[in-house]
Length: 206
Image 1 (cartoon, one colour):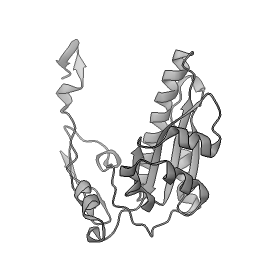
Image 2 (cartoon, rainbow, N blue to C red; image 1 turned 90 degrees about the vertical axis):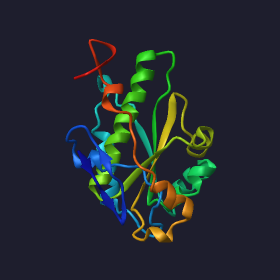
Image 3 (cartoon, rainbow, N blue to C red; image 1 turned 120 degrees about the vertical axis):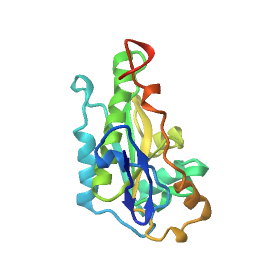
């Protein structure tokens, strides 16, 4: 089965072994954002609410978010933390959301499941952004030390990822060649029989 989502004029084709919801099939991490597009209070709050209501282990609710919109000081500090590759395209996003969670290595369960909770919150924000007509691109390429200093993030909290949220450029020809070419790369994943097992490790689930 396949799905071909459209945001702006860019498209990505997704081949799935069975039907999955269009928000999942249509999700892809784009770089070609419209630098003039904005996100309003209601839209951004909606995305943050999706994170707030993500599943959480033992009700610990460890996820914390730092939110900036293009043009404000928070957005500027987050941009300054990005590695060179992400800094080449991400500033065209309408907003950034820094996802943080617990940093308590002496408590293995809280440490590990805090990371799981962060991933769940990030995933729900990406899908909510998709539902609103935005694209969410999670980034690991940033300086954690930089954001800890910039936002005075306390001990016991670890920055995990920055989510760039933006609308895709309507005219891909307006984008830099490198960005346009990378957005045209096909979406690929390992086949299901290589990741889903039953009875024994390596025996494909059927």
